[in-house]
Amino acid sequence: MREVLSSSSFTGVARLSDDPPVQVPRPEVDVLDTAAAGGLVIRGAILRVLGYAAGTVFAVGSAVVLTRHLGVTRFGQYTTIISVVTVTGALTDLGMTSLATREYAIREGLDREHLMRDVLGLRILITSVSIVLATVFAVAAGYDAARILGTAVAGIGLGLVSVQSTVAVPLFTTLRLGQTTSLELLRQAIWVALLVILALLGAGILPLLAATVPAGLVMLAATAALTRRHMPIRPTIRPMVWATLLRDTLTFSLATGVGAMYVFTTQILTSLTTNGVQNGLFAASFRVFIVAASIGGLLVSAAFPVLARAARDDRERLRYAVQGMFEVVVILGVAAALSAVAGAQPIIEVIAGPHFARAAAPLRIEGAALLASFILPALGMALISLHRHRALAIANLVALSITAALTLILAKSHGATGAAVATVCGEWIICAGYLLALTRGSSALRLNPSIVLRVAAAGVPAFAVILLGLPAVPQLAAALAVYGCLIVLLKAVPSELYALLPFRSRGA
Image (cartoon, rainbow, N blue to C red; front, side, top):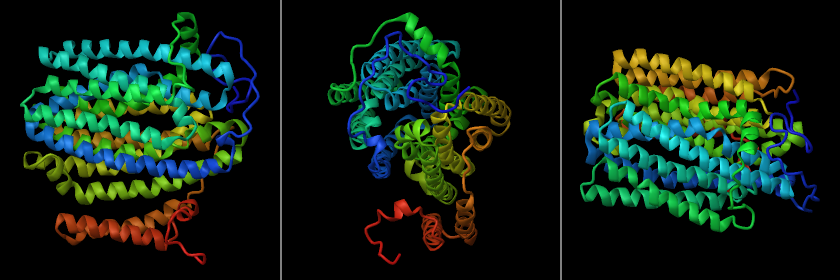
């Protein structure tokens, strides 16, 4: 099976529509084919991270409000419902967003339009299925009426975001990342504002979960307005075409769906095997972990359209881009791990309050998973670009199986800390699987590991700061300062990023 996309046939996705392909001359200037693409990706990634940082402020604000308003047990219930909805959404997602992004980047004309209309129709269908599945799980798990209805409503909110991600594909593929970041911030601002208002009014879990719906509606409407000239908003309802689409992308769907859901499985299984307090403690640490782990994906997702085009046309360009992403995520992954280990106590105190103080211990353990969490999206997007779907699926299924088994064993005996250990094991297993798949086989990409040695030389002294016994906040600041200085002195920062720094000198 061919591993690299060509302009006329696609491995695993030979034809996603029964409409005849239309050959349209490529525009004179396509940003994905120009030297400007690299700079746009880097600046777009920075914009996305800055936007995510702003969004994290909203997320921290919501967590502060929810933990204090709901208490340990009810906050655990709230987070578990969010995890159930996320898992069912990922299970039925079938990789539609990644698939649409890749195919939009390499198709043209009416062939692209037919594809997007088919994908949009299928997205609406599978979103409806995910809402039903989440609600059925809530009933089977013995939730009370408020939590069952809350699960359904939260599913609708997440479904709106899923549909929006499909509608936003043209923005993402043409590297208009400032607009995608603004849309996400708009949704988060509306959602958090509603949470604060509802908490002040003394609302229960159901209204709090329902806050996702109006936020999702506004975001979807704004996205449709921005993409109306590029994205067909009339979905097609063609079951035969959908069946072909699903059959041709089964392995791809399995890989991306399991990869998106498996980490949330830990929270669900913890809720089923421990008491309410331990579930709530893990929920607090897990919420912090998810926020931090998502940064790596935001950084490298900006490069996905470029990777897809390079996989089709220029293997050396693909290798260069993946190497650059790998270096960045290793540097930032160690910084995230250092922050979680050194700053667990103040982070939990700020976000969750004194009642969740024992959540600092599982958060420190989860810090060991953050480096893997940063590396994963860089390797995963490279594999998707190369159509290495089978390798993705195997790695994700192995990680899901082992994580689930470890959670059932460790969470039952050790509560929140046991669930944290299971999370660490799952992240590193899938990371090892991705790395093996990417560097082996006929389409292997050889990565230069020298960055690992330089980052290790900076990371070891930084982690040693923790042994000095300083108060938590000075300890965190000192560890990050040592790490940052050593990273610069060891010249670990990629030259493309260094070139963007305003204080660089010509000699440097």
